Amino acid sequence: MTEYTYKVTAAGRINIIGEHIDYCGGKVMPAALSLKNTVYVRPNGTNKINLSWTTLEDRVTLDIDKLESYRNLKYGNYQAGAALMWQKAGHNVIGCDMLQDCTVPFGSGLSSSAAIEVSTIAALATLAGEQINHVEIALAAQKAEREYAGVNCGIMDQYASACGKQDFVMLLDCNSVTCEYLPLRLGDYALVIINCNKPHNLVDSKYNERREEVEQALRILQTALPVSCLAEVTEQQFEKYGSLLHGKVYDRCKHVVEECARVNKAAIAMKNGDIKTLGTLLNASHKSLKELYEVTGKELDALAAAAQSHPACVGSRMTGAGFGGCTVSLVRKDGVEQFKQAVAKEYKQKIGYDCKMYDAEIADGITVTKL
Image (cartoon, rainbow, N blue to C red):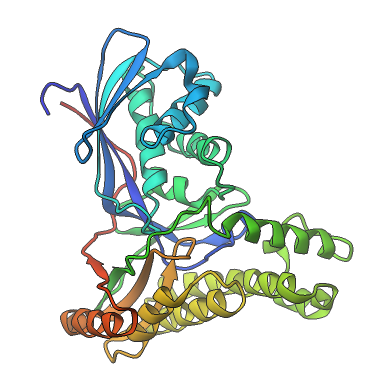
């Protein structure tokens, strides 16, 4: 890749706990992964961004003056959206050749789209000679996801992709967009990520429907409580005022309130190195996502059940938006291989096709290398 000027990467992410609460102003606990999107980039002296991929035959050219017009591209729409939002934020977008190499599996719930958006913006900033502002890049990438790709997402994915630190998880407050880094000290345990191999598509899924349901819950509770977001509703307040909500809206809100409490307990457990308590919280989170938020599906439920029943595993849950994608499990290091074999076998028996295991480390978010 020596013919390129820079190598810029941004990470996929895993979320340890705190699911479907980032857009409710909650605290979440993501970490950046060694699975990433890498952009090899060089200036080309034109008004065009030429895109190519290591895994695709396609070549796409984006006109920098017409970035609005690429929403319906099969490939290149995320890059176009990212460049447009960076341009709209007042930054100089320079004509360039970009070769993209993504090791974050698509449709896995590990945020390949955030990795693509963040790395594309970081590459454009680097070419323009700008200092990398990780949070500003994350916010621009989130706008690309929301306003260009049409997924009404919270800030977690893009923030984790941009701001991750090796061997740390982030306790990210999505309301204030501030973050505390917690050392990931798992001791005798390891994180195991397993993809159920049922791809999900958030735009077509019930993701935006869930957003509407929790927004409805917030509007109703605001008639009785002085809160600006659902994450501010305590368990005690929900016990008192939850009866204002009915049916699915009640269930969705109950998940949000209890998941926010689980994240706080998980942060304490992580600081204390109490992995067993952390595992119990993961199991409770999955149960809530299955029964109250209804975003798991039979594939993720089969994976989580197989993991939770294995003696080496202290906790397992779906991670990401759901409707397909991955689980994250806390597994004793001396039992990881047996765990993987047992879960893979049980999953195939139940679902009829294989799951996929990933060996991923907790890594840095954005990296920039001069070639």
